[in-house]
Image 1 (cartoon, rainbow, N blue to C red):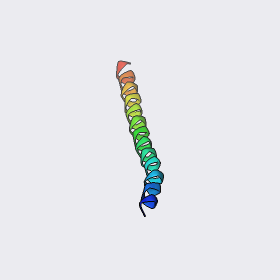
Image 2: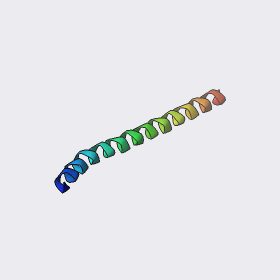
Image 3: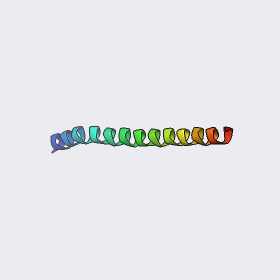
Image 4: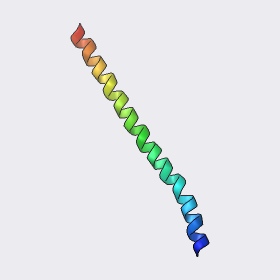
Length: 47
């Protein structure tokens, strides 16, 4: 039984790590989009 849980944990951890990385990449893309939008807005007001 313990071996089953150990293998389950081994299978589960990479997927958790993947979810965390995916969430992180989404956050970074949102931040970069916000920066791009902000720089576009300043370009418009600069003219």
